[in-house]
Image (cartoon, rainbow, N blue to C red):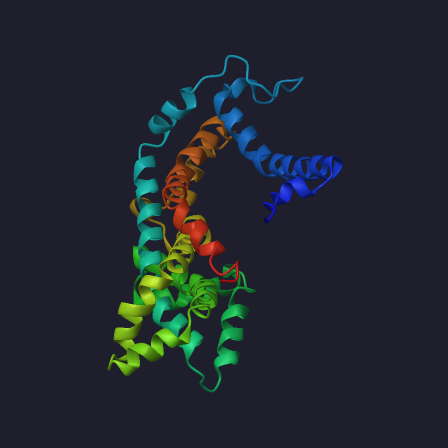
Amino acid sequence: MSKTAKPMIDRYTWYETVGIYAGIALLLFFVLAPFIEGFLVSLKPLSLLFSSPYSFWPENGSFTAYFTLWERVPLMGRYIFNSLLLAFVITVVVMILVVPAAYAFARFEFPGRGALLGAFLAVNMFSGAVLLIPLYRLMRSFGVLNTYFAMIVPGVAFLIPTAIWLLRAYMMRIPRELDEAAWVDGASRLYTLRRVILPIAMPGIMVAAIATFIGAYAQQFIFALTFNSKTEYMPLTTGLFAFFGRQEVIWNELMAASFIGITPALLIIVFLQRYLVAGLTAGAVKQ
């Protein structure tokens, strides 16, 4: 009669278990402390933010800033819509380009394949600020400054390499025998990709799409600030400048606006977390 295997956590001594949980708690503290402090700042009246001695917990705290910010910045809703629109369009375009590219890099052997992958990886080593001047001249020559297009193109270009590496690694774990079986039945490469590979690779595609969306949602500031000067096209990251006054910064409303701005991205992650977990853990256990 075989013995039931004990859970992994039960294999540690009590002091090892305490150390593990203490380390996790310390990590969570450093990760969540800025968010907690930012949320508490949003609840404080502006006059008490720099009072001495400093009070961590807000006295007479309220959600007033979450309502008054809409009066101070009437276009706040437009800024959030622009951020979501840009992130959604960038994600769709990136995935349309990345899926066949990742399949090609995972299945085909061709000259320069390693060099291309290395070049894609090297792109992520450069900050977008390095290419602002040539990108600005390029956008001006095409006459697309102060449009959504001027912010979408750089976002797509900088997010494609990461998505290719993520999805290629996932597709390489899909058995080649599936492709060969489809070819024996007379299927073309495109049909094989669409009908055989895509359904199996969907968890990996979701991981790449979520990572791309988060990157597109968070990295809009530098391109929007450089290539756009029209208020109606501003994303949230540049719209937050409205809370920086000539004499002071409206910190409580700025923090409130920031939390409202990150809420859509958090909701998307919550609703798609099962795909995210499935994609990240696929292939972790040998079948």
